[in-house]
Image (tube, rainbow, N blue to C red):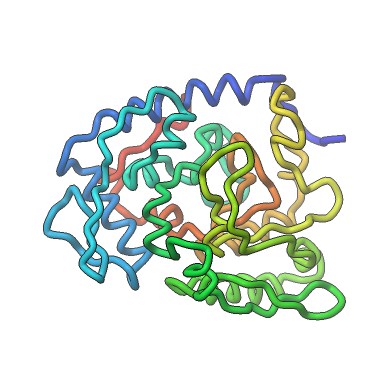
Length: 289
């Protein structure tokens, strides 16, 4: 049974619709060369310095191999699902991720981090299963009884970041170590359940865990019609320490989505650098919507 204050049934899903409207409104307001685009380029270069350099065109990002990609694809997104399916690179960084623990629950309804431009990640990590696999490395991982290895992308220091998370959590004591003792998947070339969009697992840039107790919660498992965020997971201090450690090294947690996935962490350093960029240069979704 979930402990703590419960959200009224379906309130999360009503909030999602309202927040999605705010997101879409913000995204539709862009113009070439806007401050938001300039801020997006800064975020992406700071997050992926091995891959990107500054462009002479503020409406584009420039890869180190000379490839140029438009920040905004100009497509109309009529709904939140449409946004997920047609996301531009600019859309990808528009919704701020609420780092820290505890965090503002009102900010998770917009699913910060679920909006991804697939072409960006295909360019970064590999366009095919084989090209991604060729860049995977083994990261030693403690599982409570004997060490094992998990496969993770070496691109942009992602595997090194995961190893740093492992080491930091290892210094936090047995309760935190227990949270990550059972890794349950990293690389897996597949679409997200119920969609045609590739999962971040396809790029070897995400890791799931079989969490202890009742901490493993996923909105599809719970049933969307329930509409209740599993507040009890937020009362676990050890989980909070683990989430903070992951975020420190560039990972976001799926438990900070309205469509929650508490077992899931993915390497998205551009979303952990948002607060370091002048807030005037990156549009924000109102937290109180």
